[in-house]
Image (cartoon, rainbow, N blue to C red; front, side, top):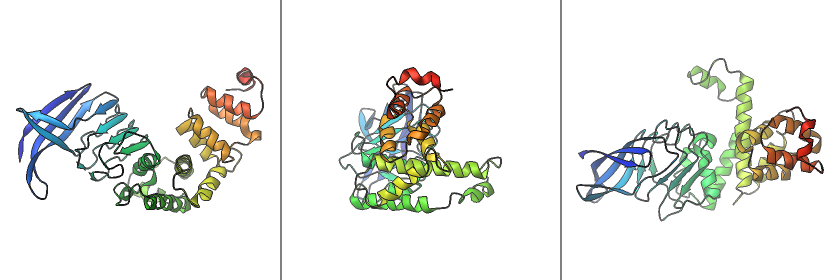
Length: 311
């Protein structure tokens, strides 16, 4: 039963919501359900309640496909009142990088429907209970479009050491999976462009594996013996190896983030004899990173030597 549909405007967004009756297991209560949110702002804070006829109704549900396909949204904050996020609520939000879900428990997610964050390729952090970015939020952010282990989003031991062990085991399983696996099924199911080559598919899969390894090595809380496997994967896919997907991932995903260049060097991913080739790969981008690489070669004036390379 619904009291009706209403509109709430905040910043550049128009939020359509309904006030619905809900049985919480003990009592009947009225709650606000966000049905659709339309706008072009990059940052949005969802209020924890709406007022209708001077009565306050808590925002408890993000409805099915409420933000589907929003290409402007980069960061969203959900209030602690949220109890359920319905199917595909944030699916295909191409530029969504950070989701903040406030609450008293830093590790407890609300209930989630299917594919809530599917095809959110840029998602980096899902912060639960706090806006602070940490290891847990970074690893949560990899799950929807990277690790493909949605069960870890709402696992009962989320945030505890056991949860990190489960995440690491899933990545180990993924690394051991054949790079060709999955291609045929995608084509048969019509989900893959038939003009896309098997080598292209394999390369993208190696880049995803590299990305997950780099993220875990950067956010290394509770990382155990799996560290060796993750480091080896990065070292075996850098410039100078048979395939350099780890290096290509560094450029594509973290081209201007110097933390990852320093990590890459610590892992042995930067060899002096290949630095010139790495700089050429950068084209006319990533000036600070170029200076860093040139510094590793011992150039006295890092930027003055750029004209030695055909960029």
